[in-house]
Image 1 (cartoon, rainbow, N blue to C red):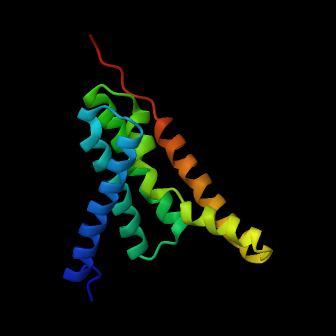
Image 2: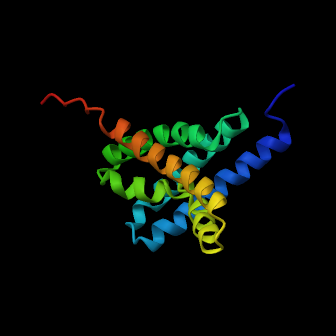
Length: 150
């Protein structure tokens, strides 16, 4: 039995474009240069696509976030070099779909509702994802770039 049926592929394509649209909106809100907007959208779409593929293959949200942030950060470095732009332009906007906003919201919500067990559970899960995202970014950005010979 194949995991990638037509329905699943259609859903993945739709999620790619929706993540790209959300990333594009965030890039516009951040006032990114106009010429870089499509590339920012591409980075966000690729990151979310890798995340969804990892979840589809059975990874939990923390592992899927790590597996998604590594190619996302590699793509941001490549685009930054090719387009002669700062890495942060692509990284800040591209990571937007992976940030655990719902986890942060529910942590605060359950805390305000005095449901400390659920608040702690959501808080730990959200913290793990945030740490994994930061670790993945640091791992990739820590790779030295080759020097060009002149």
